[in-house]
Length: 259
Image (cartoon, rainbow, N blue to C red):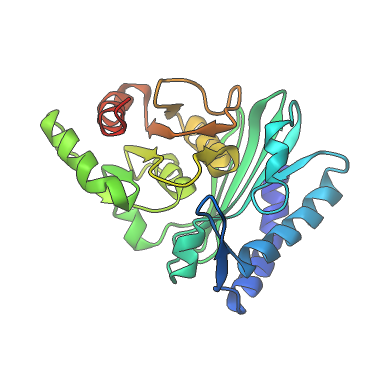
């Protein structure tokens, strides 16, 4: 069952309405995270809808209840109202709304909606991946490896040194990088912590389940699980369309991270 998919599908027009209004100006936290009025409005919308659908289930949100991540266990929801706030504030469509459901400390259901790209992806453990809408041409033509723009040149250099000829493209937003693997566009992806706080569960829970349910593999830099069981924080992750393709991107990411 894909309850989260139905919930987010019912909110798509509300997301677009919020994003069509003012809200780009924001504040930066001590950890270097940007928050805009768009983040907060989408968070309130999600909190209300999820609390109605899952009464009593804890909701861990980046914007409103981040400290809950330190203590919550078992069954709960994880919300990132805007994954890619800096991209959104800069006018880029490369951001997402992400929700994941955790049961028994494992991610069992996830939805990633891309309001300005016009498509949504969902996954349920053991149920594969569903795509609603279609990827825009600019993304549909992508191949090879995707990683954060700030490290793409170094990742490409390291992969070329290891004999890989796969093209490397800088793509912001963790959930989009993972979604491109699940959509069979990218063959591998990575994230490295380069400043501010490490990545938190809300940054990667939904996208990681998309990768897993598409037949791909996703781990932290040491090969540990991100979502089964969940890892609350990480300084880096690697993902690929298959277990056999993790090697080159993993070696490059670990070399760059000094791990």
